[in-house]
Image 1 (cartoon, rainbow, N blue to C red):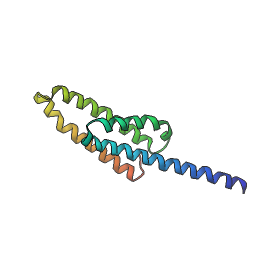
Image 2 (image 1 turned 45 degrees about the vertical axis):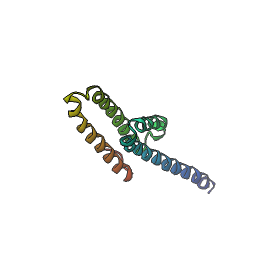
Image 3 (image 1 turned 135 degrees about the horizontal axis):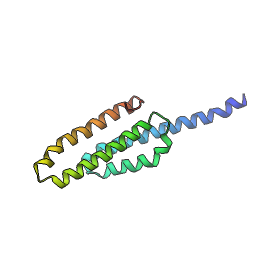
Image 4 (image 1 turned 180 degrees about the vertical axis):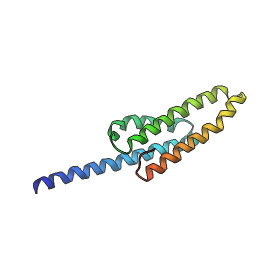
Length: 121
């Protein structure tokens, strides 16, 4: 009986940790959404959070979200840099719309999986 009592606080701490990590994952998706309002700064904040908490989500369903979010941020930042360098040319304008659509797609897919407590496929 003593062992059962001793394990309960560990289980609740683990559940609290998972709830906290789920909240952090949602905040990072929110940072990605806020990128449309505040340029790239929230996207960078989200990546910093990803790296700060990455070890803690290892082995959970949220690990795939962190990988998804990091890839989304780096590819988006890379494409935005290319767009910025070529904006005055037709090439810059041509890749702007697909970049925005791809970014929104990644946020929506990730957010929906996150809300369902599932890994990103």
